[in-house]
Length: 171
Image 1 (cartoon, rainbow, N blue to C red):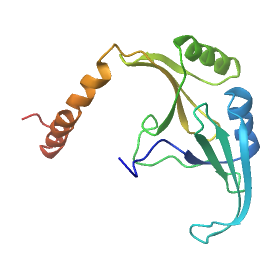
Image 2 (tube, rainbow, N blue to C red):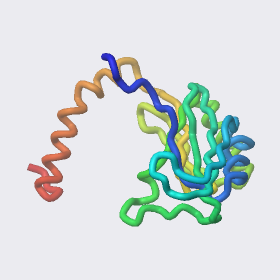
Image 3 (cartoon, rainbow, N blue to C red):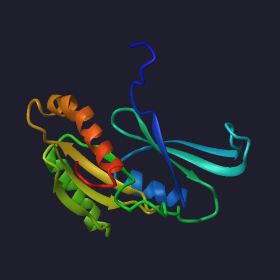
Image 4 (cartoon, one colour):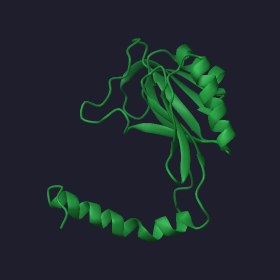
């Protein structure tokens, strides 16, 4: 399909301090800092800066990016969303790599939840210095799982939509 979305380019999130964020993502997680822009005005809106925009490269060539607005403020969580909902998941090849990150993060004093077996992935969860919940995961699905899930997805979503329309009660 021409014009189809190909992949993630970057995900951007605010940070309270670009150097603190660099230390976490580059030194601890191993994502190299590959770009830093210092800007006086937002090109898309014209809003006045200054701010720094930093990019960390992931193994597939996509980026995790952050905006340091220079105020030293921690990004505020969404008031109507539980802290476990908004998160950024990063994939590694093996379960051993997930467990290696768990060990490394805990040794650095980062609280890690998991290993959680979701029956198609195994994951650990933790927060970065900005309050962004992160997941490191590896695929563990059985052959055919994803194809089966894709066949059921629209029907399950329709069931969920009906459940909500019924006020949370089953038919």
